Image 1 (cartoon, helix red, strand yellow):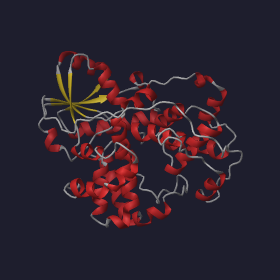
Image 2: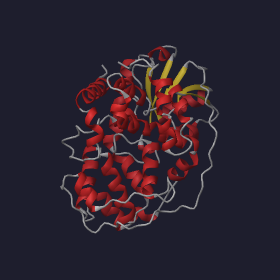
Image 3: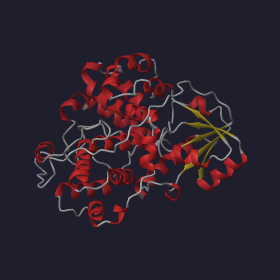
Image 4: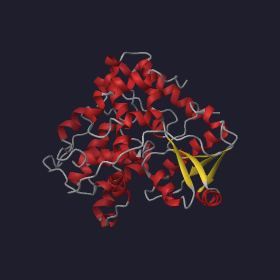
Length: 381
């Protein structure tokens, strides 16, 4: 059974058939958790790569020309771009990942995460985030802006709060989007939530008052060096494959999976995470792991203690590269003397060549990317 995979396919097909052509016009509106027809709502599947960004774009372009759905294609590619940008600057992730702050014990922080700030829209979004494990993308920007500039809380704690509760929490997209709102990602260019914008794009459901609409961007006084990436992919070097919860392709790699005697699925609990996840988010990840395991008889879910035993007895593992984030940090910090041979997606490696600078440079290469890797890729269905 591949229930989650089938859900993802059905949702994607339905969106392409019924709603993708109005996406550009309607995407910025947050109609509330009961109406998400103006967005694809595929992010929780894409984050875990049950279906991946390239599958989504491929299928969409099989129905419509790029000119008709360009905004949607660009928004999907933002996820790829963020990953690539962070791969070139891993220290950005390390600094965020290792951040600690005594604001965790402050009254303002407690009010923020409990949704008792008195800013009605913000408090409602906290409730929605905790209960639905999702927020509309435009709302995430408003939320982050209020957190940083009105509540004066560290962006890192807000990013942690999102990762804790979002089913689609992605290390690159989440970290760099919070930095962008703060004015750190594009130096000096921040995002300020305004009452008029929130009112317009919630159809007057929310009319906040007392927002800081004149704040200056944050400044970290730090320049991150660009590092080189080896754009060649590794060959199979072991009979054992390690996989993490953020790249669990069910179908497209069947041929590759068949070459492995053992497939170990890493079950990373909060005990071994620096960024705590809610029970809902952890259980969703575990459910995807279980569904994958049920489809491949040579696969086995390993908790961290069992995984460490394997690492201590085996010297060489192939690993589906989990990209910079919690999973990669865990593997690198716990590999001991074992060699981890990372298997990359060729599509990622190709796209990341254009992710060294701002998104404008990436965007102008989207037609080339489509020509080189999207049109030559078989449909995932």
